[in-house]
Length: 566
Image (cartoon, rainbow, N blue to C red; front, side, top):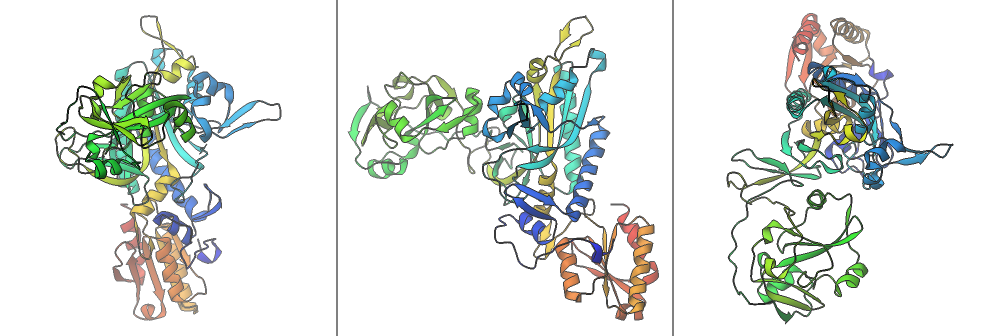
């Protein structure tokens, strides 16, 4: 390919609204352009990278015996009603109606659709099955950001397995886990496999593959001692013991004028955060619910969803809170509350001598014995784990890292096979619903993660396996001898199977070098009159900046030999 004939609209300045490194560089290097929030056009260079990423994924899926499908992106509502997820998916699902008035959805995921296809399975002899596809997904993200990191339209490789029993699912899960490890290694994406929540998908044994990134919106908790790792939505930590004091036979009121926060009560009245019961009011599936945590702990809403098996939660509005409890945030508590469900974090179990709001503005209670004075309907792990807390397994202090999720695998169980009416005959003649697993990788997000990991102050530094081209020939000068040498090298590299682009533009050398570095092609060959007079070309490695002189006649063969092992 000749650069003069390509569409590579590079930018000299950073886009003002690009908040992540990958967003900034993919825009500047001419890989993507935004159509509207969360929707991006992939330009020719991005298409080449995307194809290579998909090839790596496809090869590893085929390696574990998975078969490729392509299922529709638009789905009839009745299938989602059948699984019970039409309402569960909420506002993130794009919904529309056709000309006949039928309700439709743009697919966020394809569990229901693959299960519908699986309804043609008849016998255990047809199992196990492993199926996958590359398909566009649509999610109405409320806050799309960071370029390809968080979008509303994207390509996902999603695969699904069907087995007769749990042992078969375990095997399928382990095969996908190993395949994902190989995929991310080949793509050059460093990952940590962490325990995670399944969210609206359901199931168990969830593992997310997280790539460290300053642009990441997830926090991964990692133990440097034993290797424990979990998304903050699922992470646990050991509690540092707290000594209770000031026990009373019953809670006692005391005035707290102007107290609105945990800090106010700690500073003004001597109750540290770990001696306070924080009362949050949430609407959980339309039910007003009190959520109790230690004052110095934060709630993880996903943990609340998981603990209650809820579809949706939101903080209650001030008027809802006042109507139910008679006070506003800052003076809320659960002592004496019997008409509302109460869920409490495990860190409060057994605590005594605590302070909490009295449900009267500017009044609190002291001497609260949580299990004596509060009717807790459900105990659960609800709190956010933070760096510096002891590991729940070995006691080593935990570390926290910003990450982006690049892959997710989990065991679905029989939720979808049963709801979609899938069953097979077993060896003893009975019928059983196959047990399913689900496994996903976001293709464009993987591209962004590669750039987040592989870049410098000059631009992108693509790994050879996914680079849009392997070699760029930079021709310096327009004289016939230089052009002829560049053309011959271009043809010889192409004949040797090297993916090469020839920068034949009538541009200044500085522009050509800057564009080659910005785009991130792994190897640059500089062909100029001075070098040719000495019988050499210069080969520069993008990742290190190292340059070596190579005889003109040997350049094509040496470059092909270097690239071939990669």
